[in-house]
Length: 411
Image (cartoon, rainbow, N blue to C red):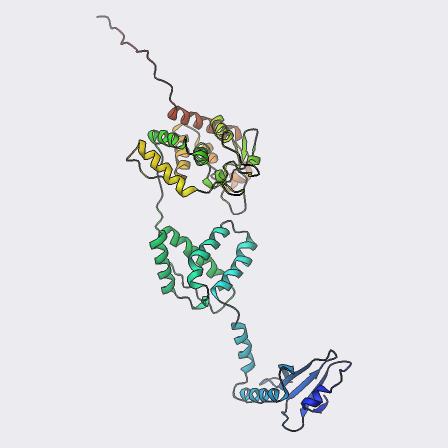
């Protein structure tokens, strides 16, 4: 390695070499171990030669590029590093770790990576809702925080506020979103300890058993009569026993010759597959207004999406039903699905057919592997029987005016 009496003038006058040349520092004020790399492209860069403790050979540590780092500054930096190496031979390893630790760990940065590398990459079905919950309930408070510094105490207080304002169910949904985010980050940061522990959930899930009786079914049918698209949607939920989300996203293209193909997405719960819609359900669908360029059977009022005013419409449905039944117990749209299944048993439908009608898995692993029959005709008969049953309840035939007289008994 050639020696060069380094000075600003000498560096500026260096001709560009045909290949990279390293020059030892020499001259007045020189520092042993300081070198200047001159490249064919014209760059001039300072490095410090150093020897790791207990190892053979030397290493090079980059100090900076000239003239951003001047000669005097480079010599001073080299001297300080040599002193630091004498005091702690691992100083460069520690500096490297410190640089790695400077990776942006702000909550907002981690959320961005989480959305890109977990939610979008894996096509998480609930990803959109999860990101909305994070953005609305967590981001305002935690946006600029180092995620590694978030403690259980402050997360608990934040969940308390969410519970007070939006209820325990929402607090648990936000907790679940944070848990997924924390698991994602823990895989990428050895120093992260999640603040979540068992027992932080607020909502104690209770198995619902609510089904509508005959009077409530009549009140439901009467109330939905004048509720437009929501009324038609709710009635279809009842008549098909399908999950709300499947009816909600029903498209005209999914129905052919009266048969509704429910479709199935990754990570989605099983469903009935194909449903031959009974005439009552078909008439409801056919009489629902269509919006141009909107593919959904039950369209929303904005753009091309499906119906969306669930909360307000459900509240109005309950209000209308209680005009007829003032003491009626609260129920949810999902209770219509339970009502459907319960009444199939009342109609003496074979249990394994009734379960298939609502998309439940039937049989053990061996049975499901070898028996791939769809039971389409049997399910069709079950849906038709239920529709007839509902029609008989909500529109009973007029009472006969013929009075049966008691038979005279001879004495």
